Image (cartoon, rainbow, N blue to C red; front, side, top):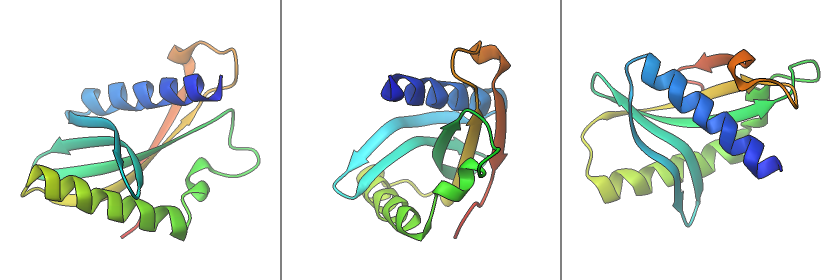
Length: 119
């Protein structure tokens, strides 16, 4: 069930990015270092997007789950994606927070998007 909800959060994030003019280049990209939820491009930037789905932000912001260890895994995985795709776009690391209480209509989800969430 958590995997299904997580996938729903990623789909909502991808739809959000498309509405903002991004092209989705990859979803669920895996390397030996980890996974990148979404790889998207817009205006010379390739955004490596970590999606965090939560019921609400009352305990802590979803973005806080992207700690230094997770950031390092994302950096290494992004380097693998760049090596495999030979992309000359400027890389950026973003975090997309999706807040959607369980058993709620996905159309009512709230999205908070942070560009350059970490370096």
